[in-house]
Image (cartoon, rainbow, N blue to C red; front, side):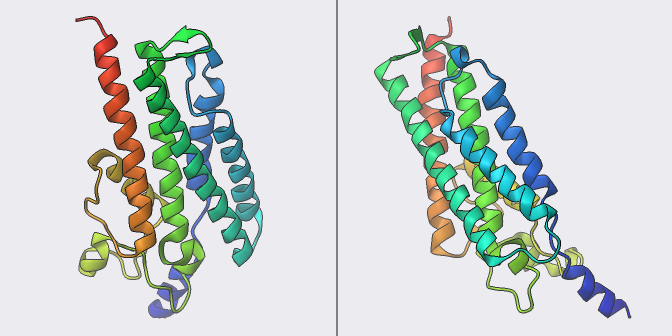
Length: 225
C-alpha cells in the first residue's frame, strides 16, 4: 500500500502558487517606483509580466492537467520577457557608457542602483520561470510516466539516498539555479545537460555581467570619495 501511495503522491502536479508570487513581486516595484527615478526596464516589461501572471493564474485555477498549448503560450511569454529584459539591460549599459540623461535628469547613483536592481530581479525570476517550464517537459512533464529527459542535473539526482523517494525539482530549485547563475556567471551545483538551457544560462550571465560591471563601475565613480 505504501508503494501505491508514493506513486500517487509523486504524480501530484506542482502548485503554481510560488511562480505567481514571484511574478507579482517583480511587477510591483516596477510599477511603484516613480518614473523620474526609474531608468529601466521600460513599461513593456511589466506589461508582459502582467499578461504572464494572468495566464499562470488561469492555468492554476483550471482543474486537471495543464494543456500542452498552455505551456507553449507560457514558454513564449517567458521567452519574450527574457528578450525584453536583455534589451532593457543593453539600453541601461548604453546610457551609462554614453553618460546620457533620462527624462532630462542626470544618471545619479540612486537611479542607477534602482535600475540595476530591477534588471537583476527581473533577470533572476524570468530565467527561473524559463528553467522551470523547460526542464524535463515542465511541471506536468516531470510527473509523467515516463518523464522526459531532464535539462538539468541537480545534485539530488546523483545522491538519491539523501532525498525522499521520487524527488523531482520544483520552482524553488530552478529559481535558486537562476540566482546562482547570475551571481557566479556560471553553473554552480546544478549542471546544464541540453544545448537550449546552456544557451539560456549564457544569455542570463551576459545580462548580469553587463549590468553589474558597467553600472556598478559608474556608481563607484559617481559616489564621493
